[in-house]
Image 1 (cartoon, rainbow, N blue to C red):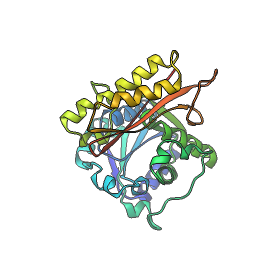
Image 2 (tube, rainbow, N blue to C red):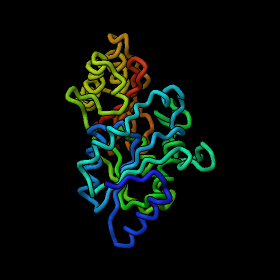
Image 3 (cartoon, rainbow, N blue to C red):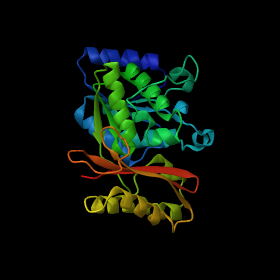
Image 4 (cartoon, rainbow, N blue to C red):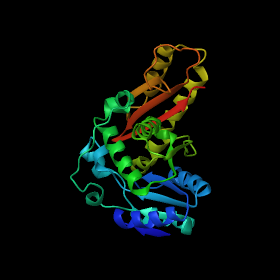
Length: 282
């Protein structure tokens, strides 16, 4: 398993591989790896000759400096989790200065209003930061395929839109959410939860499943009230938002229309940790 810390040397190495008609998969991460990340790596390894995994905590996608500071980091552990993939893997661990040579700023993007829904409303500048760093990584790695988890479904849709707008040739592969035994969506942020908080957080997925079960029999207003009520008994939890949205446009829905696919999205604070999840309603 090769590890690169400088983009220039990685680009030279990957160019040589491309000249040999080697297919390259890419899994971008911010480290603190878990089985959700590893499922993306496994899929990429199965699909491609070589997989690049980037480990980079991107400052420009954090609107809260405290959240950035507290984001879990354990590069040594991350590398050990990737070692079983051995020769099929390249790990890229750049510095901030190597990724942002001209200063720590994001480009501004317009994605047909996808960027202004849900997470965009609550995390100012978040998707500009995400699109900026992913665009940089695509330019460095030039992958055939890139793999993203559906837990960050809004991010997935925005990356698809970015690739289309930029005319990039990378194929975006979406992968299902990987969950803990109690249903909690796997996330690096889960490491910041206490044992009790981790157990209580199971209500997030339980609520989403209940919404799915009742979606065809109840109207959206009733479902919104149901979700609010489910979190009232939990003093340590704050429901930031719950929305049922059109899966393609991500616009919040007030009523159901035939021939549209809907998805339920949720963001919850438990203690000081912010968790997101979603579920398809079809």
